[in-house]
Length: 100
Image (cartoon, rainbow, N blue to C red; front, side):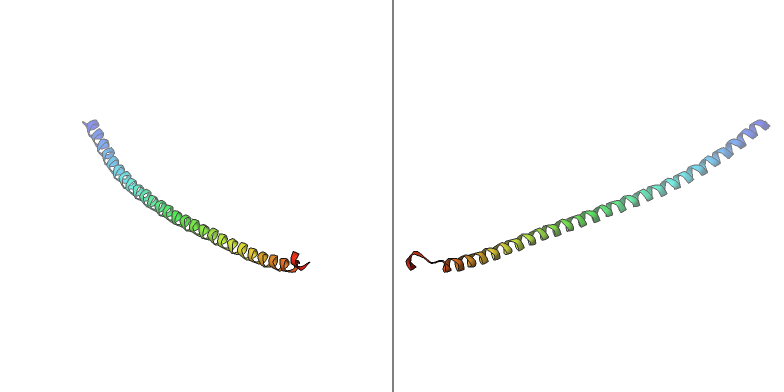
């Protein structure tokens, strides 16, 4: 009878310890799930931020390329205009057949 009481006492203590461990594990798991959820939200936010910055950088690069193209076109037009003026000046100084 004493052995039975001892075994039942030990079993009761083990059951209580098991229940306490289960609740603590459950609490730890819920905290871990919340932490993982927060990290996922932070990663999604960072991904959106990186995508936005990438889009802005691409837009700025495209604008700079367009600006450079316009500037080079203006430079070529200016050079062409100056060369045309120089050509007309040179041609005006060359005597034609009528002058001989």
